[in-house]
Length: 117
Image 1 (tube, rainbow, N blue to C red):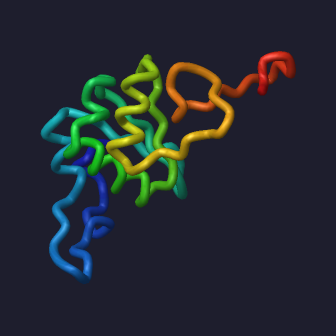
Image 2: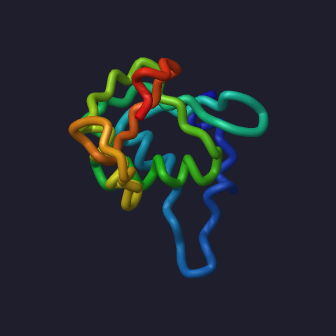
C-alpha cells in the first residue's frame, strides 16, 4: 500500500486547528509506510537514520505511531546516537537508573542472564 492508498480521514483537523497530514511530509522525504495488518502497525521503509532526528519527519512519524500503534523499521541499521536523537525528537525519553552503555536513554536487554543488570 502506498501513501495515496491511505484513508486521509485519519488525519482530519483537530479541534484546536488544522493539522497537515503527516503523510505529506513523509512523502516529500520519500519515506514509505506499509500496513503490517488490518488493525495495528506499519513498516517504515526508504528512510535513512539521519532523517530520524529531523523535526518534520519525527513529527510525521509520531503521528503515524499514534495512528497505527507500532512502527517497524526493517533494515534501518540505526546507530545508538541516531536512535537517541529520534527519541528526543519524539519527546523526552526516560532514562533508566542503571546505565547499560554510553547512552542512558538506551536500556540493553538480553536473554542471557549474565548480561542483564
